[in-house]
Image (cartoon, rainbow, N blue to C red; front, side):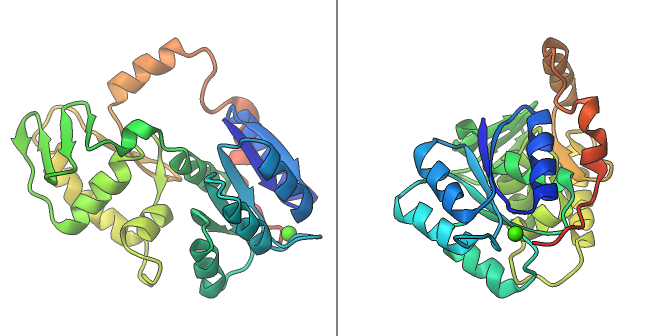
Length: 254
Ligand code: CA
């Protein structure tokens, strides 16, 4: 997976470059909008992380030109601009996600993985262990037993946790995708709904599928299967070298 980072702040650029490489991504760094746009049009990237306040060409213009050329690459805007208007403008212009600075590296990585969702996660039926979902008929079953869900529970479980199965998602990500951009409440609402889901999806079964990831949020995963997959993989997903990066909260500006 190849990622383009367009970021003029040297400290943030370096953290992104090193951190994403530690996550096994190939990363290119452009330090102004013009060279960012040039790379984006010449190289086939799997995702672009785009700052807004950039020398030579601002991020909005870069995004606009990328979409004008019909490049479908997912774009995550990473900006210190806090205005809801900027966020809405970016998403309307074709950005796929928007993360505000200062940000946590864990949150960024979780969002990048969400952008890189594999095609099989868009299929009409999804399953994790014995939990199965029919997205056409909106039917959820566990071990063949139907599980009735409210609309919000369904959106949280199917459209978010299932689609990101095996990848931790943060409370903020869930709120933004399952509620909506205008939602002003607390991210605690996510914990409340996760508890509802646990009561329906996990309780009464011998294996829990919804797990808490400390310091991040939640993941829907069949941990027995994941352990087997990890054992076969010689490179751990989260290397020790990037631990300090992953826990660091970046405080630099745009
Ligand atoms: Ca900047």
